[in-house]
Length: 324
Image 1 (cartoon, rainbow, N blue to C red):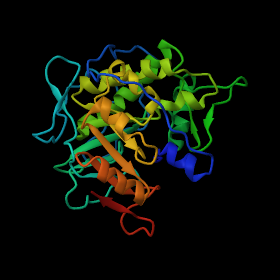
Image 2: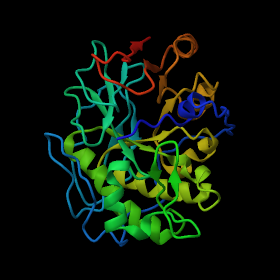
Image 3: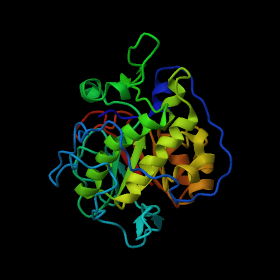
Image 4: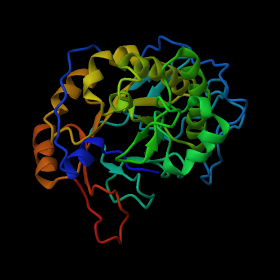
């Protein structure tokens, strides 16, 4: 599991930081694409959830599973679940947030929203967001992709996998409808596993992978693939977040995403742009004390947390946690 603060890593490496532009959009959670797929999943979905509450169903495509979406907050606003039969609950506004992608631990007092890796168990009684790396391969899952689904790995002109050098992750190939359907069958199964385990929502990482593909992938590819993943999430009763990628804010309705997970939006003066589109359904993670304090002052009605960049666990010398 890799923590994906892309902008934070760029800045930390001294490679320069960019602020992304966006345009106004009206948010709609209506799903415009079906996630049914006959890709090359062949009933194999790769590493599955191994939490105490059970794992993903080995043969599902992320649509056919009917599952309780887990514990939700009664005051949370709802998002369309894409099925016409109910609503997926959104994170409670200003609910107290912890971002635990570096390892699960007992949430601090006052926390109501927790994000954890899909292979971790959700936190009992809280609103749980399931982290899924949907556009790139986790380093420890590289063998799965290369062995089981080599055609779904993006390749360069020599046939070698294209690598995100900062995270040592292979890029997945979203360049055609057939490949997107194949990927959605696999990742949709992981999403179903999140629902079965009791998560309330999913955040799909690396929406901006196309920007690191040297032109092999496009924004349109990313958006079309997210439509499929949104349909998978809504089909099992989960809300789905847009993660970072401010440059695609204007296509939120098209993607079918319901809320926003934003790393370092105060650091890059982007929080207001996200709020313009997603309202109070924006959760914010900052890695610098001054940025965190600015976010708390500017957006008092939102869930904001200060964490250390590596998202360590309590007891680690680098561990940082604070909330407004």
